[in-house]
Amino acid sequence: MAKQHREVLAKLDPVAVARYQISEKDIRAIERYIRIIQADLRGVSIWQEIQDFPRAYATSLVIHEIVEIRLLQARGIDPLTLDTETLQLTLASHIDAHIQATYDEHSYLQDHIAHEYKQLFQIGTLLKVNRADDLETDFQLLLESDIGVVLVEDEKLEDARRIMAELKGDTV
Amino acid sequence: MKVRKLQRLNNAQQWEDHGYAFEYENGQCLFRFNTLVWGRIGAEYNATMKKNGTTLEEVETVVLIGERLRWLDIEEIEGDPEEVKAELDEACKIPKPQRVSMAKPAAA
Image 1 (cartoon, rainbow over the protein chains, first blue to last red):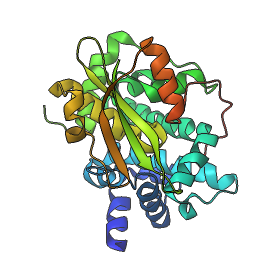
Image 2: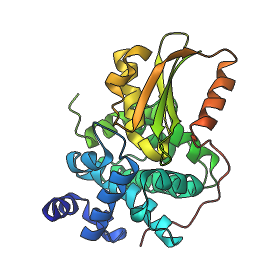
Image 3: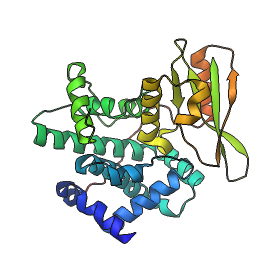
């Protein structure tokens, strides 16, 4: 298991690893955290995706989880000791942690894409294509929060969608 | 509105509403989930259902669940669809968009 965690850490974007000071212990915590919150799900899990997706996209997922975990810990909550139901209720009471995590996840993607593809997208644009979901749950949560102005560039959605697919390793 | 509820066995060993799938008038089926639990996985399931034209009857073939979750049979709920969804969201404890004061970022 430790090897698995080391491998995940090794494949992450070193810029993000340095910025968020992500350690092997953090990766272990992320795996545990996801196993608790998604205990009732079958099929693919976020942990599986972190292992399977290419570097940049996997890094964005790790950032989301570690930001969420650290915000809870900063409030005296140890999410790794909670059961699934209690963790879900706790997160609902600290929904800003999820929103901040979503913001950081897409802020990283924004920086990465700007650097690698020389294209700048608004975080709202990236979130819209990254949660390919007509219900737009995370987008609406971000929109209503006071995290800042969330803009969507309709004319750039197709480009953003194509780049996001590349980051996920989609060949189509 | 045609709905299929997803229930979870809670710590008190009672089944409680956890999410649901519903059908639009055009037949498109959507999974309404708690993003704090399902996150991008739930969104991906919706994208898959849209792409494949998954029906309410078939939803469990896409949204895979463990033994502490169960899909109920399809039911028809009378009333304004938006009001029905709002009531189901409440029952499923699905977080609704609201003005939220943000914490400080956790980056080092």
